[in-house]
Length: 137
Image 1 (cartoon, rainbow, N blue to C red):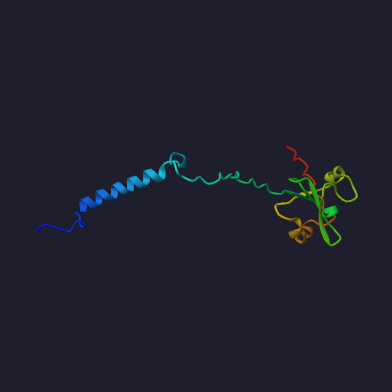
Image 2: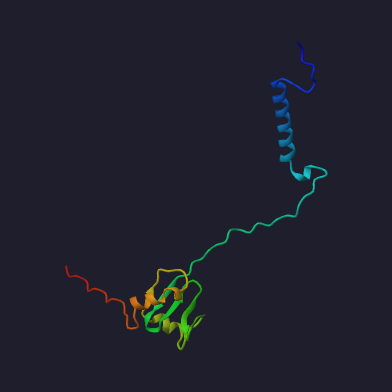
């Protein structure tokens, strides 16, 4: 008995036709739009380089309850109920403030979030420990 239906085909024919269509689709889609004569190109999109995140690093001056941001070179302190960030400390030169005893902080966000704990660890009269005398040999 012969198959007289023109729309049926054997498996090999279907596989060959599918492979041909897949290859043709891949060739058309993979070619650049400029090679296609009637292709519409969209606007060029600029991609920004990845952002560089710089962490803030603080020193704390207990005698003045003032922080110095070593990254932005700003002094951070409470002025009444508000926290301020300024290039100079209140009532003195930056050089005088930076010469006072200080402690390097290990947080990188806002000092006001840590101030209560910092003042408990480093009260206004805090001073760094005295260096140990060298042991005699």
